[in-house]
Image (tube, rainbow, N blue to C red; front, side, top):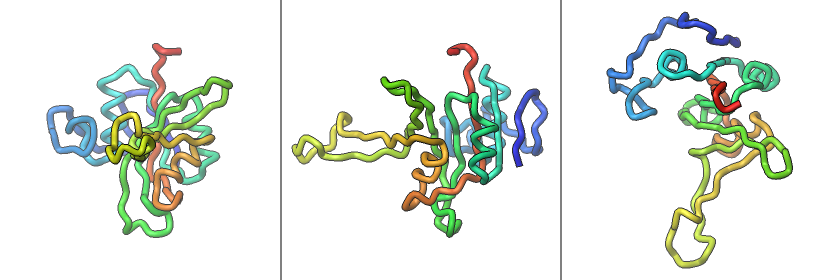
Length: 159
C-alpha cells in the first residue's frame, strides 16, 4: 500500500502532538507510530512527505524517488518478526564521482582502526549502500531487514 501526504489528511487516524512526550524518536515528539512521525513532519515542518507501507522495493523506490532522506520502520529480521523492529534514518547522497549512495546514519559501527584500544569518534564507520533496498535490508539482522513503513522527506529549500 502506497500513499503520499499532500494535505493534513492522514490515511490512518492516529494523532499525536509535540507536547505529548510519549515517544521513541525526536526527543519525545512523535510517539511510537510511523504515522505519527509522518504527521509531525507534515504538520510542523516544510518537508514534502511521501510514505509507503509496501514491501515491494520497486514500489518503494517509485514512491520516494524524489526524496532526500528517509525514516524507515524496519523489522530486524524479515523472516522472524519476533526479533523486533527499529527505526533508521537513511540519507541519499551523491559521492565525488556522481554516484548516488544511501547512508544509514544510526546503523554504523565503531572500530579501533588506529590500534590505541580506545574507540574515538574518528573511528565510527557509517554504512553506505548503492540502493535504498540494500540500505533497508542492511539495517536489519544479517542483511535481512524488512520495511514496515518508509517515510520519504524532501526539503524543497535545498534543491
